[in-house]
Image (cartoon, rainbow, N blue to C red):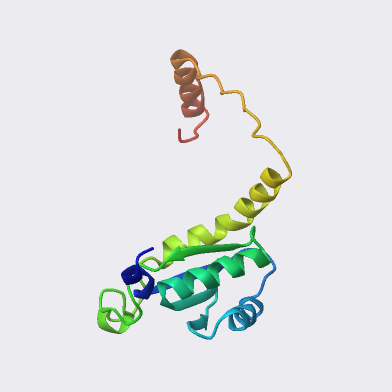
Length: 150
């Protein structure tokens, strides 16, 4: 990382999975460094500061619970008019629904990471055979005769 990159201001979203509370992680963050801004959110933390300091904090936080702490860099800085709900007239912020979808997947990802660390291998699932076109038409015709919508 160059000196210019290390001094660049960045905001990262620390997204939590499982039973970890944002307050617990925030306390750990304050213990690690005071050189960044830490804001608790419903999904975890927002960490803003110089890239080098933020990256150091993230590395240390992930050591606490590597399978339950996930990080993504925020695309726009806080207060940016492209994201600010006040400038857009309210409503959910852009990206909220995507973040919600990602958060819902995290418990399964956490479990998978634990299994991988324990040495588990992926189980190859047999590929289901395609249904014959004539048989498929037969099923549709039968459903239509029974009064069901196909």
